Each structure stands twice: as structure tokens, then as C-alpha cells.
Length: 492
Image 1 (cartoon, rainbow, N blue to C red):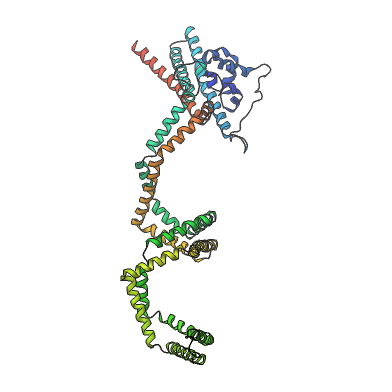
Image 2 (image 1 turned 180 degrees about the horizontal axis):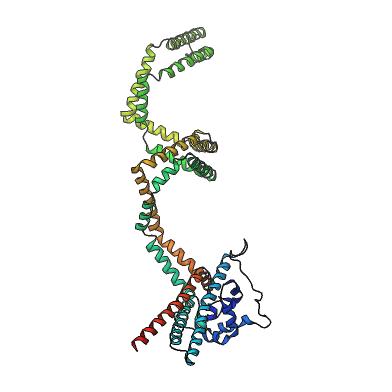
């Protein structure tokens, strides 16, 4: 992988220890060691590297070799290293084809020179064309990753030198062909997410999973939020809503319905009972208050008699009003409330006074504290319900999911709506952030080291690229044989 890019380098002969793992090529490697001159003629310094196979003292048997397990080594092994080992083996095989063609060409030429007959010409032509095809494809494959033989030939080492341009082109290609709205819509429409989602949600186990995950997300969100921030937002929202909405007409309609239904009578009953009990308990205070308001020139016994009389009349009135549902005072209360309900809806002065009262109440700190404290109570209630798997909140959520799934599985109109929503959302994301996605690809590629990128790409695709060299050798040989045969037949 790190040679000068010659034929021997392209074949990975520097790691010739792997030859023993490639069936049928070991003998070729030894032949190269015996005749390094032929290898050097075909592949420059690669032949010299191949000659190192027959190192002194190696003996006839296979020497020690660094073997790479086919599975890529142990659990901690680098997967790219296993791929590089595979690339090296395929390079050896492809180089072996070239060397075989070279040897066959040399033998055929030798046989033709010694009168072997016409067949030698056919063999030499096929072998010669095979060498040409092998060398041409070696050059093409090598030029992708490095400069062949280290020479500064134009348009070579394409991946290291054109890495940034390739990344930009890849980003544009992805953006135009995968991140277009038409492609996204067609793909999502073909998947049919709506029907699949319905069938999945209709399963109780899946509905339980979604409920559990949604509850966990809700709990997390509520616990992360700062109470002071949420309270400020909630308080401002409620206050703004209350100030913008006139409440007098609504109160008038509510009061009108309450009076019409007689719902206020229990309140009147309660007031009468409480007033009677209070008068009984505080009779002396009432009489003292009446006596204190009397003129100073009246005798004290007269004041006392008047106080007692007023207290008794007041107690009698409250008692009769408490005990008699048809008491005239109760009717007066009904008429008053009815008139007040009408004024709340139609009288401008009354409505204005109610609005001023509303604003005064909202401005009070006690009311603002009450509004703010509502968030704490709501949050605690929701968190407790989300924690309890038997709570009404989770039970209703699960039931709703099951119902949605059952309906979504059979309702084609609902499926179409869900698919449309998803398509619109995906299309919006794609069209809005396509430039960011494509720039992520190009910027990521631009940030890679050129040499490391070249090695990594070669580790992934280099093994398959070596078949180009093998095919070039075989196809070149067949083409050369055919051309020689045709030219020989035409030339007589």
C-alpha cells in the first residue's frame, strides 16, 4: 500500500508473506524470486521486492510469514487492517496474472525463434496483449490512489489531490438526487408510514412502550424546566388574557342562568343561617352599637330600650327570612340579582366598573402569587400521574394510542392525512436544511487527511478494483489473440 506505485507495489509484493495464503500463487512468487529480472522489467522496483522472496537462508520450504486471519483478527482488531490484507492478496493475484503473461510471452517468443511453428505466434500475441491490458489497468487502478512509479504524471493520484472537489461533488450529488422534495415524497409515499404506524400502535405492547417513553419524556421536561421561568410565563399569559377579555357580559350570562335555575337560593339560605347565628351570639354587641349611635340628649334607658327593640326586630326579620322560602326579602334578592345580571350584560357603566375592579384585583400581589403558584400544583400533579403507571393520565393515553392505532390501520383517509403531514414535514426539513446537509458532507471530507482518506477508500474498494486488472489481463489476451488471428487470416 505504501510503495512507489509500480507493478510490484500495485500487486502488494512488499507483503509477500501473504502469498502462502493465496492458493496457486506461491509458485509464481518463487518463480519471480528465481527470475527477478523479468519481474523488474514488468514492474520496476516491484520486481526487486518480489526477488526478496527468495532471500538467502530461506531454504526450499516456506519461510515464516505474518498471517492475517480471514476474520480480521481478534475482537480488538482494526477492521480496515483485515480489508487491507484482502487487498494485498488480490494485488498478488493480479500481479501473478501479469507475470504469467510475461513468462508466457517470453517463452513463446523463444519458441518462435527456434522454429516451434505457427502456434507460437498466436500464444505470443495473446500474452503480449494480456501484458498490455494488465499494465494499462494497473496504471488506471493505481492512478486513483497514488502516482504510478512516483512519477508526476497529470491526472494521477486522483483521490488525494481531488479529495475536496470529490467531497463537494458528492455533497451536490446527494443534495440533487437524494434530498429533493420529489424523491423524499415518493419514497415516503411508497413506504406507507401511516398504515404501518397504525398496525404497530394497535399492538398493546407497543402502546405501552410509547406511553412509557412519553411519560418519561414528560417527566424529564417538567423537571428540567425552572419553576420561576414557567411561573412568570404562566402568570403573564393569564394576566394578559384576563386583561384582554371583558368579563362583565360573561358574568352576567352566568348569573342569569344561576338565578333562573334557583342555584343562588342555597347561598341565600347559608347567608340567612349564618346571619341568624351571628345575631344570637353577638346580641349585646348589636345593642351597644345601636345605643352608641343614639343622640346624646336622650336618656340612657330610652337608648337601651331602642337597642333591644332594634335587635329583636332584626333577629325576627332574619329568622323569618331563614325559615320562609317565600319571604318578600328573598324575592327582592331574586329581583336584584336578575337586574344585576342584565346590567352586567347591557349597562355600560356597570360593565366599566366591573372592568376597573378586575384590573385592580389582577394588580394585587396576592392574586399574582396565586396565579404563579398554580404552576407548581399543576406540575406536581402531572409528574405524579406520569410516574404512576396506573394513573388516569397514563391509562387514558394508552387507550387513546390503541384507538388511534386501530383507526389508523383501517382508515385510508386518516392514513393519507398522516402520510401527507409526514411528507410535508420531511420536505420542509430537506428543502430548508439541504445546503447544511450537503455542506456537512463536503466539509467532513475536506477535513480528512488526504493520505489517510486514500488508504481507507482503497481498503474498502481496492479488492474489487484488482479484478479490473485481472479482467484486463484476460480480456487483453483474448483480444490480442483475436486480432492476431484475424490479421493472420486476412493477410494470408
